Image (cartoon, rainbow, N blue to C red; front, side, top):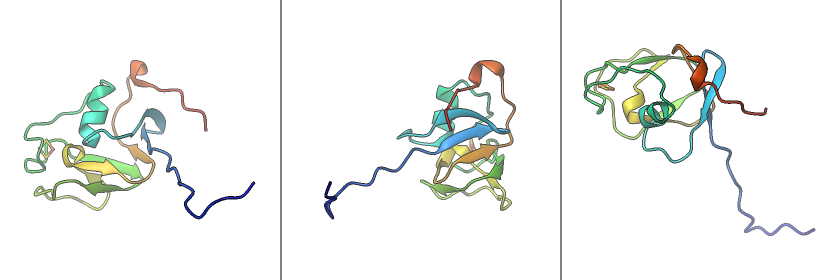
Length: 106
Ligand code: FES
């Protein structure tokens, strides 16, 4: 089989984990906060625009990019889910409730 130079490369959506447990595939949601809320993950938020810092979350592993520049101060291992999206698989230091768990084959 010949592979054309125009062959599309499909990138797998990042897996978001809570303390190691997979909870969602991030795929086209506007922000990480929106994706977590769709999965009914409990996460506190107020301004939803990167200003107040109330959604600040520690990242155990992975990286994010910001769709809107955050104004709240962040440590290197923290993110603001209200204004970022994952660029790699992501593991967050958030509590996992049993109903949020997602079975993802590795
Ligand atoms: S909700 Fe205010 S910074 Fe995320």
